[in-house]
Image (cartoon, rainbow, N blue to C red):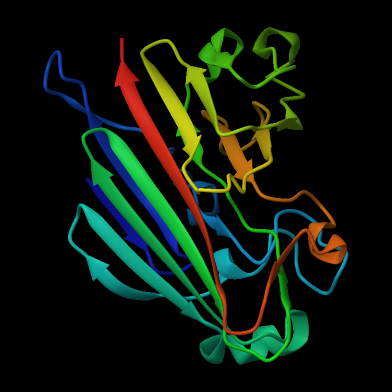
Amino acid sequence: MIKANPYGGYITSWHATNPENGKTKEILYQGSSLKRTGIPPLFPCWGDSGTDLRKHGFARDVEWTVIRDSGREISMELDSHDIRDITDKEYPKDFLVTINAISENNNLYYLMSVKNRGNENMEIAPAVHPYFNVDHKDKRKIKTEAIKGFDASEFDWDKSPPDNDYRFSKSAKIFLPDRTIEIEDTTPNNVFKHMVIWSQPLNSPDYNFVCFEPVTGLAGAIKRKEIVVAPGKTWEMKLRFTVSFH
């Protein structure tokens, strides 16, 4: 079961079922504001692009159009024609972005497609920013597989939680006290190159979460033209999130 908020194109809720007891659990953090909830899309960029774009892009700050919402499958679109007041100032491109999310057997399949409808090349560096439910007291117990260099026990989660990027290659696992979350890049050419791990200190309104963010390109990636969508072409990214309980 998944839910969405068309403002910002957020996947706001994802429930997975523990097969041993049949109980469902909310996997995504429910924050004090939408900004700290669920899975926001970061488009056209992650972080500071070095251009006129705002940090993390504008996609999470505007209204999307819901195309389908069945409770199991959600599709939303962001049409540049509908936000010309923003794109004219920050990103004068003609595009259509589509998010398709499907919940199936404790998997969440997340696809973003970007169509360049303009006559010029379009530089992009998208990402997603999942907020996962993690009790603050359990953060130092987090273990990971295939995120080289991350050690949860090394951080002062009360005052100085991580805001670090790590190399990401195809898949990684996050081991929490009661469940494991696997994040897999299922795009044929594996477009995600980084995993950014971030949380907030204990004195923040929201802190019972850790973000594991699959990122195609870090700050400045748009200026470096790491991903370029030619006129008339469509670029895609695909992720699979899988939850298992223990």
